Length: 195
Image (cartoon, one colour):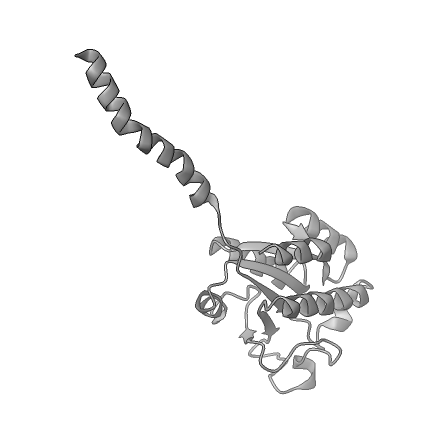
């Protein structure tokens, strides 16, 4: 009788055991849906950056170009202070003409360091079903870093683009790249090619 009960239990349980071993692997897979966030590379702030800005601007353009090759949204973020500007429409407010943004790239205007605070950025990302962010721009120790932590707080996977962030002192930029998840252009390309 015990043997019959054992065999019946085994017969009933085996399919469940195999089903449970497959389930965690399937649940662990997550499809990457990325966006590139280009932060505050405005004419007002660029002159305050260190000598790394020329390389950073080339890397930002490279990241924008790569994003477009893989249909990854490019979202541009602009900073203004209600009292001190720069005000939208002023030349100081704009990105340099050498940056390959497009008029139809979503545009977010912020008044705080984090691009998420009191803006539509999270709404834009959620509507596009984005779950992974690549950040570039300035300042590495200010708005880019604040946006990085804001993204983490909202459960986005977030990465700094190596050599595409800048600050007033390149040692500070290096420090930020050391303490955050940072990926190179080649790594981003690999990630996008294997989505």
